[in-house]
Image 1: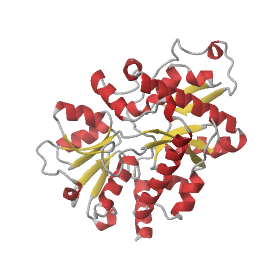
Image 2 (image 1 turned 30 degrees about the horizontal axis):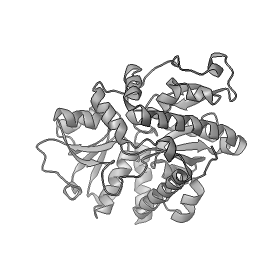
Image 3 (image 1 turned 135 degrees about the vertical axis):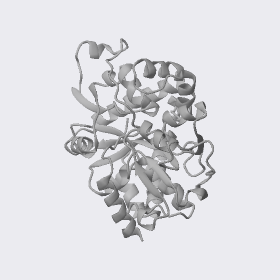
Image 4 (image 1 turned 45 degrees about the horizontal axis):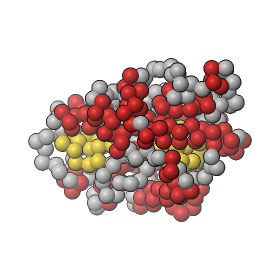
Length: 350
């Protein structure tokens, strides 16, 4: 059964969209804010110019945007270019070290098993995915999904794997060859929402903010929220992954990057309204409802400075193990779970 699921997933991945981003929406463009550090102004960057994928994020990409706009990357010695990068670009960049770090979900775990040379080095946030149905739909729980069509952004992506875990834990096979559910990929969330409205799919698995925007407008009802579902609540949905090459050759660079991300997380925790102002004004996310955006940002569990302690690292490691176990049980990983979880996580002394 496990091998059959792995083969089915591999075939699906070959047919699906190749993006490996977390929380993908439209591209944005920006320039560093006036808060950039003295080092940045003088052009004195210890680690020089680097590329970080950061133009494909929604609200949950906030730490990248804030680290860039508030000058935290610059303070830590980086002249950062925020880029758009599909799966192949990320894979090449991570493997050769030209992209030192990316944010991504547990969708990366099977890809690591298949040869992407990265390790989990930190946790970024919780939540940010919702499953929506039409307001008059009779679907209200996972038990109602048997025989239904589910829209996702990509086969093998995070919404697809979240749905697979949700289904399998309820005794419904997510394996396409079993025919109990059908997954249909849509490269754009708006197209997925249109497919739901037109009856082409029964359920739309949507990244924030799109699902929340339509929920507030009354266009959909939400049957699943990653941030509140008992299996997923309180666990990271998004991690930070560092290039093995950079970790081995220059671990201080990874530590400096994590300090920048952590400064951003802590600033967002203290200043969610100001963070949303920056995100909206700089066009990083497709949302105009500031009140809703603040509510969502607060729900992602960005940590305070006090939370960034030894217990934080233990939590990251624990969540890696948690999702490795979950993906192993439904056949998406074939390695020994305990050893694989140990192999793919690396604590970095920041």
